[in-house]
Length: 279
Ligand code: DGL
Image (cartoon, rainbow, N blue to C red; front, side, top):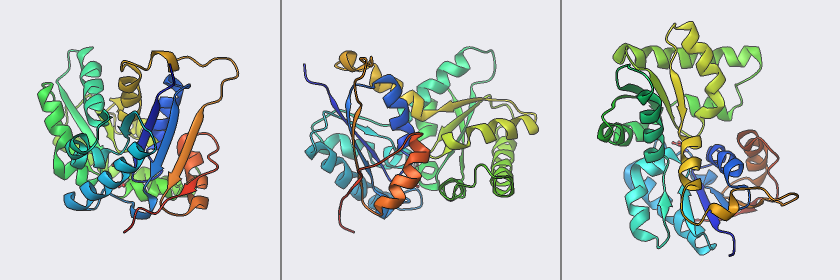
């Protein structure tokens, strides 16, 4: 049986955190990744625009031979998943359902209140897609828009002490505001592709705030959902010496995609192809 081709789409580099998790679980699949970097960020745009961008990107990946599409972008999943499912003839997995199920599983282990905080972009929060999905599972969600976090991550303000102190303060304020609304929350869902890179900082900040919570990463949960799909059995294990096959497309600067992409993927990104999807 030929190995499946998994198309992975995001507004930019952030979806590489989902690809990172997919590569761990399904190392032998073939991947085509598209980062729509020319039109990034999606998180501050209108529904109509996000749907148009998402459909153009999704159709491109289907044309590249994808047997399955993973919408690695939380914003595109929140605003355009239904439209993509209608427009494409391949199965489409978004990040919201798996993320919500992972929160349910996390909260199921304790006697705590079924309350969670979701951090996401403004567009994702305005759509209330996470609140709806978590509500279906009996979980009350407080959604918090954190528009400053994506630029801070993209600027790389994550490690050196002078810069990380700014990121840490911004994060502290967002968390304080969210926890004021949801003081009993016991799970924190990372509802944006960029936030897994802030995970360590979040853990430290939550400890400082004396509010430890389980952090749920929708990137990891999505990769697990894709790995459990029928047809993925043969690509789960890495045969000795087998090379992972990944093709990267970006709609803006190749140099920037390779540089930032390597941080998100946690391994070198090279050979990126430039794609013009129009304005
Ligand atoms: N990929 C987006 C998300 O997960 C974050 C970046 C953007 O706003 O485009 O919501």
